[in-house]
Amino acid sequence: MKKSVAILIINYKSTAMLSRCVEGIAVQGCAPLSIMILDNGNEDPIPGDYSDRFPSVQFHKSEKNIGFAAGNNLLLQHASDCEWIALVNPDAFLHPDWLEKMISAAMANPEYYFFASRLVQAANHEIIDGEGDTMHASGLVWREGHGKDASGGATQPREIFSPCAAAALYRRDAFESVGGFDEDFFCYLEDVDLGFRLRLAGYRCLLVPDAIAFHIGSATTGGQHGDFAVYHGHRNLVWTYVKNMPGALFWLLLPLHIALNIVTIIWFSLHGQGVVILKAKWDALCGMRRVWEKRRNIQRTRSVSIGEIWRVLDKRFLPLELQFWRRCL
Image 1: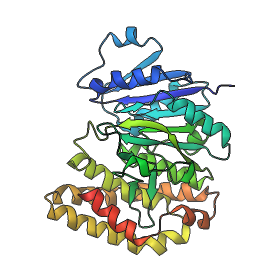
Image 2: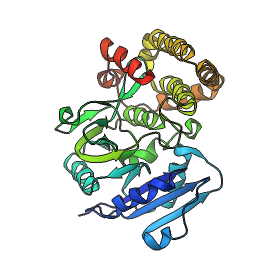
Image 3: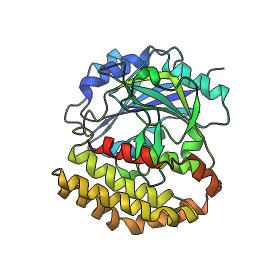
């Protein structure tokens, strides 16, 4: 029996890519229940003929840009009677069998509740953009396999920390049970924060390497190293660690997390982004009272052991060093 799926898309300054994205969804072999698009405070609004071209799409509008996190939470309120939600970015173009592969993996692996797909660079299909997200013990996060040759990627499904929400699948009941996205994040790392909270609630994530999406990445936010991405990414990195790292691990790993932040500040300052990285860390600290209250609620309802979280964290030194420079260069 086919499972009902709602596909959610947040459109912000991405109308030029949106048509290709939706065309890729429309030809999926496993038809979703609904496709929902939020026109999110756009300066380039969706053309009026989209409703005629894509009659199965439901369009919603926000007069201001409310961010990726709040946008998806809003769309989900309109997605009734779906068991699964698929998040797809406008700059992610799905292979025709992407949804079929994802749902098949979900049916074959009922012990998993959220699923990552393989992201391949849209400009070069020989290069991996990411195979899910890795959380290091320091709090550093990266897309696994980013920049590597696609021939050397994963060949079999395997457990990972969390998916990149550019093209991911979630059980709706699990997504809602942890409160959806944290809207204070606005964008960047909101998917890792969600994945961490799902982990703490006892849900596991599976990479489905034969479900492929071609991804541009940071197409509307000035690039991975633009001020917007640096600010939100490095502010939210602190919040993700503080909210979610459980119990003794929080205190044990805190010196490593502080060291990571110090090195980050020095690096970006030496490369002309001192103001933005200092603002990111200052605003992270200014929001700490609210974040700490969220932490109390999250840790109070945690259902997995500290050992289970330790198991899924990346604890190697060399990958930490390499991934830090890769993120910064």
